[in-house]
Image (tube, rainbow, N blue to C red):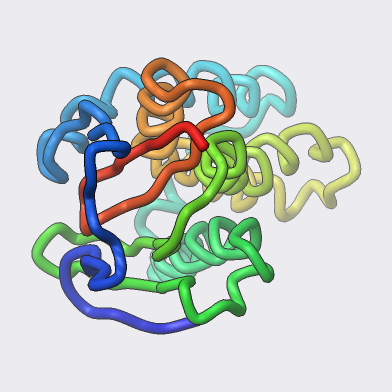
Length: 195
């Protein structure tokens, strides 16, 4: 795994020839805007049930917003979210092609694989943090000690919101890329090819 600061890096060994097709996708700042409906959907599906299922005390949830420890957990969650992506990369992210990046001007962390990958594996990479950090805690909520449920719920809901761009990207890939294609990124741009 490599670390990178700045925009998603381009790859010198990737030549875009006539066999590759560009995915129709927005620029980074536009993607954040287009992801808002998916954030709302994620909240309705994975956030709202916390309030219904465990009858969480709303004042406790609001008070979490004003604790510095919650913000430390939240920032840590961003890193854990990206590690979840990396764990689904080939060799569980321990390949020289796996990149953990920080893009300060976009306020983004990212996990990037600098090589060809099968379409459905990329979809799995994109959706793993949503299932691991939002759906799984909700499903296992009845086994959690009651004292930590508000914090777990808060982090689960926050991750569901963070995952909106991942869900949007997965939808673009599922909609535009044929089933047996391979996918590759060149910087922010995604390309696919049927092998």
